[in-house]
Image (cartoon, rainbow, N blue to C red; front, side, top):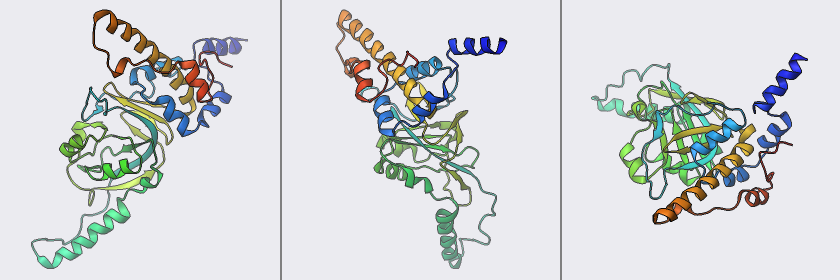
Length: 292
């Protein structure tokens, strides 16, 4: 009897999440989630997370922040599907006997360098990148290494990536900012050196930890000037729907105030599709607040 009452109380508090619903949400297509979260704001998503029982879950440490912001174009914002990779500090010796003041050692150094990039610290996660991917990189404590730079992040974007979330290890930061590559990282953990002799790839498409949050491949990542939030795939549909409702309500309220005060209308107060119609078009329940 006591156990039954406890379960009912938990359900009323929003912490009971039926397995069937969780499985249905986990099976949602990437394309549906990308459309659902397009334009999503971190704060609305955090509210959606609380509504399904995820209090203070998935919200990354504020140190994981955008390298740059453009509040006119909002190009620093993104939402997408996680592809994960983990790099760690190498436990191998540095190249023996590579005294580069001696010309005869240079060719040996070049071969060693090529081996490191191709065998020990490559980018095998690239094969999983597609339209809407967010590369999530756990590279904490991998020495003063720039695992990401101004060229490879452009390569990932060409394959469809919408942004990078990294524990650190970003270099060429001036160029990254100038190129407007959306990057969220701990600036004080940036890396200067290249990978050779410093780090190795450990895991690809396995759970990683960035900013104090566990990220699984396929989770939804939303990033803006408020930070980064990770939505577990099993709850992504309902959280996304609630976040969309919150966003539409905010837009309508702000637009009314814009009009009352004579403020010039901008893109942030453009009225989006009504939630019920939007959800129906995506093949989702029209009211996420009514649990089946």
